Length: 183
Image 1 (tube, helix red, strand yellow):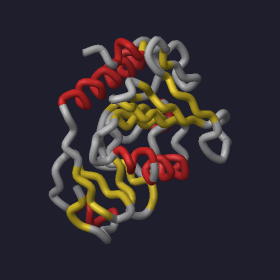
Image 2: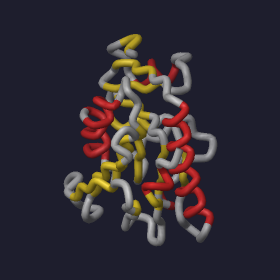
Image 3: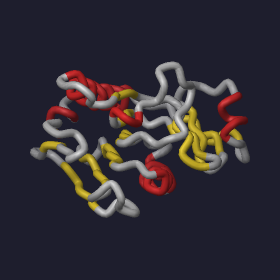
């Protein structure tokens, strides 16, 4: 649901918006996630956080927060991970650098943005990998760069039922797709 357009990052951050509000192309976008959306987001965050805690210098996993990726763009990924050298300050209210990995779980009102404009902004901002979690299809659409200096997402994959989600960004990380979508 859109509520206001033409806002700058500073105007948006100074506003008193609900927690699940983002700024996309200067337009305030409000999202009201479902219980299933939150459950799947929680499972992904738990899997990433568990992986982070299993070793040293494995970065940081989180959810939400204000990621200012370009003019007029303040995204709050459902889940994110940053490499150790890219962690935002513990008391920061925003990060002007992109997360290393961003995860967006499908919501009916914003899926078109996740697959379109937000995907493009994540790519242009330098996100190394993006997971779009398609709950009705029980699949994860993965977009990543083959090397850190790749111009854009040049590797894509759809990980579905029976598959295991892995990534070269997180050595030893794995998430069974069937477990992720278990009811």
